[in-house]
Image (cartoon, rainbow, N blue to C red; front, side, top):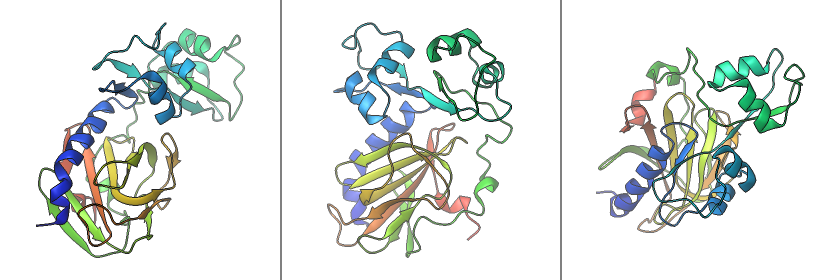
Length: 252
């Protein structure tokens, strides 16, 4: 039995909490011990913006189980208008104007950053068809072994300090330590899947940061109940709310 199994239970609980919190992409469910100040720091969102988007007058008036919006930012591209952004994200033009202090909706500039209170982008390419990932590289070239327990994943052996790479583009939704797993990195692909990288000594990305396939995101470490540096690589399907076997996404 893998030494990872001794630390799996708290990790599983943690991963389910994190993944379920992000089941609707930019929502977060308040957990025990949370407060808005800590959440603003964790997701690199100004406290004032969290309060405004969620229409909260007093930051102390939050309760466990309360669902809040974690706003995102859209960088204006050529051809974007407030009207097209409103349709794309399923919100009103007036809401976008008020939140971004825009008085003239016709004056958007390329590379201007627009705060989006709720991300509900619908795209024909946004699906979890495994064929979309058939050309992925693994996050580390080391020896791989299946991990089967309360969740499915792949253990990848390596040396302490080895670079860990993101296997896809997406946005970092978690980057930090968790007991028994060193530092954890979770990347939301925007296609319904979350890729998890557990067992890092250090991370080189922050929450909210966009990454591309091949981006260096961390370095492998040796942690509790381990005698060898191993990365636990997992895939979570947000739509089905279940873990997938990463091997099903690969040709090789």
